[in-house]
Length: 227
Image (cartoon, rainbow, N blue to C red; front, side, top):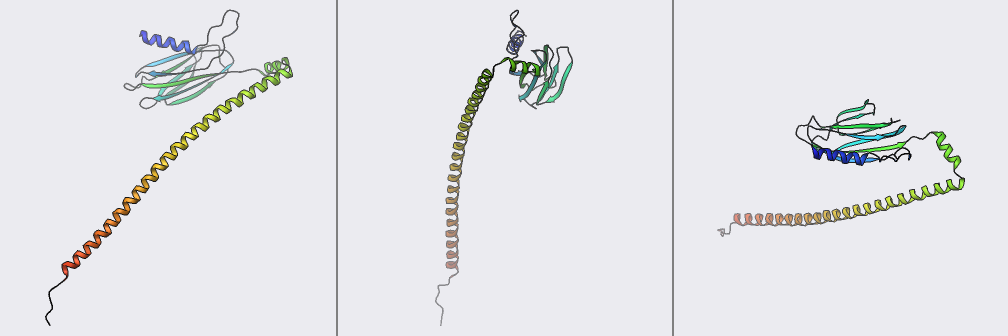
């Protein structure tokens, strides 16, 4: 029980955003992901703080265990059941706008008496800004500053794309190496099969010729014919 309590405390520490200092404003929105082992016949719940008027996306997937299924429920800070699924392998759910408070996510494996499940889930937050706030920010920023911000965003996007393309090139090169290795192996096997097939055919033909010659000798009459 103490180990389970410590594990739950660690999960909450990883998922919950840090508490702001007095006068520092609301805590920042943080995304989180976690993989845990759900024992057979057990139910485990997690709590995630959420600000008001935001978007919360919850995604889970059973990545290990017999059946690859689990029961899932999602409750609002007021205790209202928002999502209830039974014996599902994965799911994606979005809550918007969110309420200020702690959302409760529960994974239930009580229907299984033998198999434990390895479960992965991820929480993604998106702030919902009003059009007035966006327009007010645009008016407060000088055109030059907006240009610098946009150029910085474009540069960051290009760098990210370059990194992903380089990774894709590495993966394609590796796949081509695997393909070349497999092709060479298959061609070598084909050559060996063709060679030994030709040898077998030649041996069969030789044996057939020898059998015919032997039969002819057996039926040949070498005694002289009287005249």
